[in-house]
Structures are given as C-alpha cells and as structure tokens.
Figure 1 (cartoon, rainbow, N blue to C red):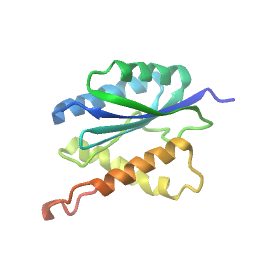
Figure 2 (cartoon, rainbow, N blue to C red):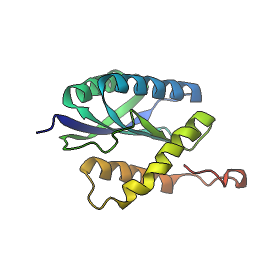
Figure 3 (tube, one colour):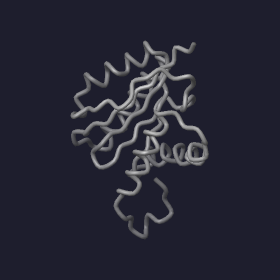
Length: 154
C-alpha cells in the first residue's frame, strides 16, 4: 500500500503585490521540494485553490504551514485522502493565474502545456476532478482581455 496522500482547499487571499505572490510561490516550491510534496496552486481574483500530494507526513507538514499562513483566510478543505499515485509528479508547486509578469507567463506555460494531458485522462482521481473543476470555473470567470493580450494563454 502506498503512503501517498492528497489534500485540496480553497481560500480567500489578502491583497498581495505581484512580488509578494511570487515570493509565496517561490517559498512553497522550495519547501515542497524539500519534503517531497507536489501539486498545483491556482489564483484568480483574490481566491486560491490548491491541490497537493506526497507522503502523508509531508502533506501534513504542508497542511500545517497553510493553517499558519497569514496570507489568506476562509479556508475550506475539500479533500484529505490517501491516493495510489501522484497526479503532478514533477511539479513542486505548479501555478496558474492570468499572467502579469514574465515569471507568471513561464509558470502558465507549464500549466497550459500539461492541460491537454489532464483533459484526455479517461479516469480522473477525485483530486484531479477538483483541480479541473476550479480551473474551468475560473477560466469561464476570467475578464475579457484587450486585443494586445490576444496571443497570451492563461
């Protein structure tokens, strides 16, 4: 039996600058790499959705960091389950948000490149279903872009 575990939550972000959001992402990626947790963080109009997976003790460590964070409130945990295999084995913290700077544009490129794979999976885990549900809702909720942004993807 696998010791892998997954969690997912939503929360409301306190206002952050782009540099604060980039620092949050950098810190999460470093910590997750140290403890062996992978996953994805979606940010849209002041809301977070995060799915993360790994050894149960490491997932619980990340969970503790999230609970202690002062960067968001109104946490609602949606998933806390054992899993058979990882959905995001190579992403210490994938990230997606409509790009504002080059760092976010690069992060989005990773997500967009992986999207066709996740869309064609016939059987999805409960965690992947949650990720896709929030992604789809937030893409539909995205404000219209100007003609200058027409070539970008989010």
